[in-house]
Length: 158
Image (cartoon, rainbow, N blue to C red; front, side, top):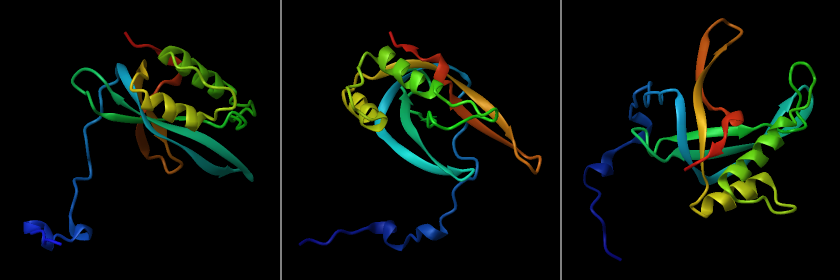
């Protein structure tokens, strides 16, 4: 086995490497063409003594100045409820709408994660959606900004 010279990497201690806190600049709010990526997964959370499972998806911007930038979006558990106690059945409707606009059907008995990853692996799962910034005010009064894909804005990509 031959030895590899790591050069300057040999002495790097990643625990001591500083990274700018601001990271990447926000993507400007607007409508974008996205390509679904095969990184969907389930995320389990507890709320009010109940367990809910959301479906998390990843896409990248497929065109324009922000091409290649990734976004993450979530389909909440349709059994979860909002503040008024209404179930989030709209979540399943928006996943179905996404399947329609990308033109890849959800197969009978196929779960959301399996579908999203299968669709993404075709390389043809493109869609248009709005990306916007939501300001969340925490209990301590501080603001937290989060960029979100508007699940109600899915449209077919040209």
